[in-house]
Length: 79
Image (cartoon, rainbow, N blue to C red):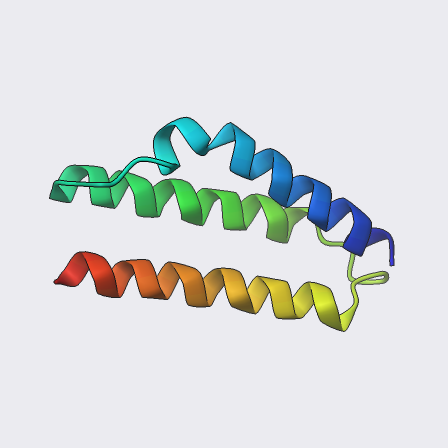
């Protein structure tokens, strides 16, 4: 349960922290790779903060959604 509350807060902080670089459209290949690296690093921060003892199904669902979102971006950048 602890992770659920912290998870939401961490996602908000990451969104705010990354808003300057992640909020704009990645128009060239270098920007796209940088965007993906930043998103992956954010995901790793979340993974590292997980307490396996208190993690709930909703937390795992959100992690899966983050990966799905990242995969969607990769597909968009391939076009």
